[in-house]
Length: 407
Image (cartoon, rainbow, N blue to C red):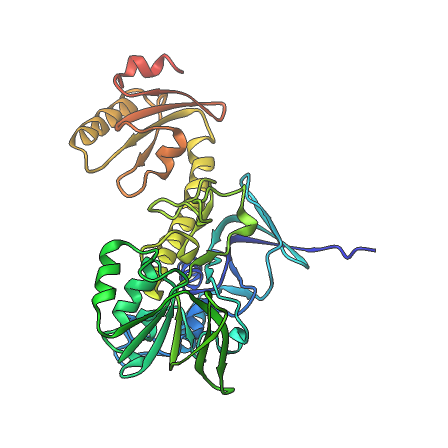
């Protein structure tokens, strides 16, 4: 007999506990929303694998990635955010109540924030798993370049990211080897980056090669064995660190055919981190980003957490104040002089009608969430509400006679 799932209800369910998800949780938790973060592996995400983070503001002495993420989690817990270590199996994001299914529990939520992040594409060469992240294989030159000052490193890849990051590494490392699977002189990057790299005396290209095997001690990598594609021979390269730049895979598999995505599988969002589904937001590395860093993830998470709070507040206001009774809704922008003049006219009509005409006033200066729900894009406007529906929107005539005709 199948075990019946437990059902839990939340204001906000955050899928993913990296820097973006944790920040979103801090914002929603501080807004006193019932919030849970579901993370299938390690809270903190990819940042926890970075030994030194020296470019996050407020930490002049630097921090370990794990240490920084532990502070994020501690702050989220301070605001009442709950954590659950499990994998999300499926989601139903349609309608006012969203459903998130895990193995043992069904979560019901007013809003969902997708912060599932992504993962670097790896070579899948022999022994690679032993040296991932903090044991010799890195995916972030910005994070780990300084730690390789005066050392020799290997870059795998020939796209824009690989060549540009490899060039950046030459500011620190004494030697930057680059393994390229193509014939001599052929790369996948832009021509400017290619020309600069070929002229850089610190860069040495190893053409027609792919990674075959990683070798080292239990603690750290010391050699990358490449395969020469022309004759199958092995090419051992002794290095202190291997940087892999062969692509990035967003963790969006369960959202396919549900959320709008780019061709590469990144979730499409606007400046409010809103997806194509109302009440569903996405932030961090799961979205297309120019720079993937803890600092940029934090910015995304802050926006998503705040946007989720506003969505819940505006939903309650829309149902309890806008649609709850037959009346008029004056929608205006407080920064607009014409709107201010019309507001005085509206207030005069209220007084002169002796209570027959009443208005709910909505200022869109800070947020157009309510006006978007009403389908209003011109300000000022008056929406006529009857029987829980908006039956008309007036943008020109707000006279008492015109309004009384709707009574």
